[in-house]
Image 1: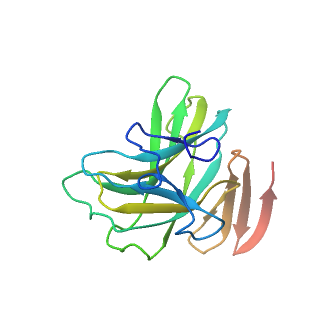
Image 2: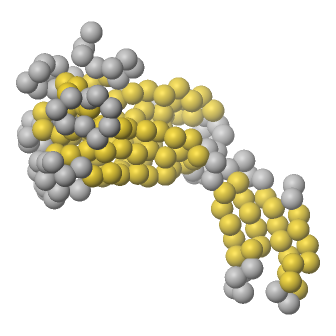
Length: 193
C-alpha cells in the first residue's frame, strides 16, 4: 500500500512517510484525516483520482474542497496551490479547469474553493474518456493540507430575459429549449419541447 486511500494516486515526486507526504489526522476540516503534501521547491507534487465518464453529453460538474498551507506566493517559479479538474478526450487531448487557493492566506486558516465547469463546453464534439481530479502543491515550501474534496454532477439550466426583464428562453444541459413570447409584458405563448 502507498498509504493513500483507495483509488488515489500520486506524482513521482511523492515520498509516502509520516514525515513527508501522507494522510494525517492532525489537521482536518471533517472526518478522521486529510491529505498532507510536503512542498519542495523545484518539484511538482500532486495527488490525483481518475473518474471514468466516457460520454459526449453536456454535463456540468462542480469541484470543491478545503485546503490550508503556508505556501509561497505565486511568482516566477511556477508555484501552484490549486484543484484541477482535467477532462480527457478519447483522442488523447485534454482540457484543464483550474480552481486556485489564495497563497497569501497562512497555514491554519482553512480556505474553500468551488468551481463549476462543463465537460463538453461546446468548443468540441469529441468523446469524453475520463475526468481526473488533481490536488496540486507545485514548487512550494512547507506543508499543504487538503480535505473534503468533492466532485458533484449538477443539472444546470440557463435562462434568457428580454430588455423588459421577461423570461424568453430556458435551456438545460440536454439542449432542450423552452421558449416564451410576450405582448405588452403579458405571456402569450409558452413552448416546452
